[in-house]
Amino acid sequence: MINYFKVIIIQIMEMVLIFYTMSLILKTSPALKSLWRTGLSVIIFFSSFLLVNILGKYSEGAIGLVVQIISVNLLFKVKVMKRNITYVAVYCIISFIAMIIYVCLSRFFNVSFNVVSDGLIGRTLTYIIILIIVSIINYFISMNYKVSNLLSNTSFTDILLISLVSVLWVVGIACSTFSKEEIVSPKLERVMVVSMNLLLWISIVVVTGYLWKSIISKFYKKENLMKEELIALREEYYKKLIDNSNDIKKFKHDIRAHMICLKELASSEKYDEMKQYLDQMEHHVEALCNRYNVGNEITNIILNGFYEEVTNNHIDFTCEGKFRGNVIISSYDLCTLFYNIVKNAIEACIHVDEGKRKINLEIKSIKDNLLIVISNSISEPVDINMIERNGTTKKDKGNHGYGILNIKRVVQKYNGVMNCKNSMDMFTVEILLHNVYET
Image 1 (cartoon, rainbow, N blue to C red):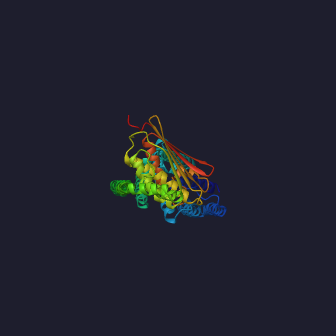
Image 2 (cartoon, rainbow, N blue to C red):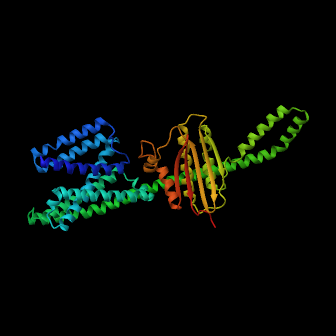
Image 3 (tube, helix red, strand yellow):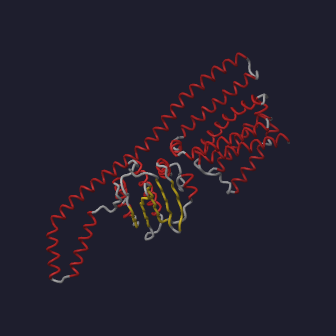
């Protein structure tokens, strides 16, 4: 019975560590609020390890693996492939780190490897160290949006390759430990050492090269798509400018005829017809003008590019303020910033009843700082904590959330701050960029 409780304690610590790490990677917590799922997991967990007393000491690992796989599939409500591949990766990497810590502890305390790896104190200390390492890594990743962007581009193939390398390293360290403790024969030891060294170095070179190529190529592919979108918006904007220029020339050519008509209507005291005529002229003049002009060409392109989408979705869009001069912000970063904040606002407004859809954009200059405030109607309060963690409130986090990450990247690049808040039936994003005006 004492052995049973020892196994249970070790397995609980291991499962907590694995679940915590998976929650950070998947950006979702286990479904512990589901009583039947949690209850079933607990029953399977505690009952399964009774088999250890019957099958023997070395059955603990196999039973633990099966129990963890069942619990992961019960408690994580993400796609089957995603949760299982993530579990395999987390289990392999944690095992790799644990193996290194076992070796370090055994040498530090001058005890055998088995004493540390099988003992309750050794396991507890190891899991605490891993928990601290995982938390520190997560903190630095969350603070660095460039790293977050890179990691968001990892595929399941990348994760599997990382897992494979972790397994090879675990086996390599285990082989080295067994040989030093004379668990295997000298001849077999030499074969194991040579084979493992060869496998390890090949895996490092191949996988590192593949991951670098894979992640960087995906990262730049997304950036190129954004640049292509900016080029397309520019082309459309310049085309509209040319069309407007031609329309203005036609209007100027016909202005004399319009004045004659208006004079004739005025002299005949046909004021109702005159008013209708002026209304038509006003509508025509408005069509010739750019709807939004904030004193910056790139921002004008973005805002005017959204005019049709705003109009078609019956959104009351107002834009106040202007840039007070040239800014050091690159065209690409300005496009990224304004495209994403306006696009997110439009997507939120679409879920609001017609007649209540509003977006208000304010651009203010405070000395050399640029303040951007955008507010949009919402159907319900936004979970700001979820946006900060995942970049989106949508369930499909794998295909959404990049907009917020890109906004944060630009804000961080220009030493700015970003604040989100709910107020009544509006959601507001405030962005302050420091020292961005050219001197």
